[in-house]
Length: 282
Ligand code: PAF
Image 1 (cartoon, rainbow, N blue to C red):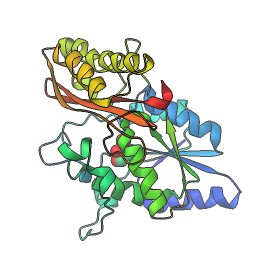
Image 2 (cartoon, rainbow, N blue to C red; image 1 turned 90 degrees about the vertical axis):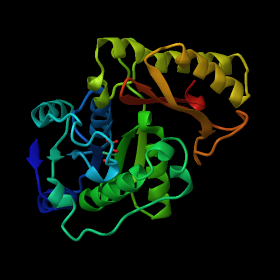
Image 3 (cartoon, helix red, strand yellow; image 1 turned 90 degrees about the horizontal axis):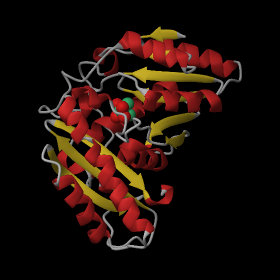
């Protein structure tokens, strides 16, 4: 496995692979890789002849009050994990390689980005769409892999690829959880021991929602208020949102009459965690 820092190196390597008739899978990440990322790399490794992983903490998707500076980083660990799971090349650019001094073009999206995380993170998806478009233009993969934990991001990327006629297949991969149910996230490292216990309220409350749906409840407000009451019983938890939306448009729905996403963002202390389930996966 090689690690490269420049766009030119990525392009030359991918061009060589293409000339040999090889397919390329791509896993974009912000590093500090965990089993969630490992499962994306595994899937890409199975589906494609070669796999590229990008490790880049993208400043453009963080608001000034967010955790860009403190976002965890460990490139040596990332290299070892990526290699173990079949990655052929890590792309680890410096910010100035991705954003030159006069950078002034953006990829933005309406509607899908206006709900859920878009409400509390207004510039986030513009940053995600811009960096993912740039990475797609650099790597030019056949397929790209995203986790379902960032369900809105997955829907936004699918929509962007469709809107902008990008010739890339987007594959959504299941959420990977700790044994006790907490969804794997690089941000879990921010939690102290008490917060780590409290964070289980996200997956527990989602289980409550799933039970209600399995028992036949279709009214979204009823499901949401039951989920919220589980979260409110945890003193360290503060709800950002709990919503049920149409799986494709990310718009809120009243009744479970179509494939839907039940998504939440909850602060545990200062750490904002997200989790969700798709009704189709119940
Ligand atoms: O999901 C992430 O880690 C990031 O949002 C992504 C897709 C790598 C873009 O920076």
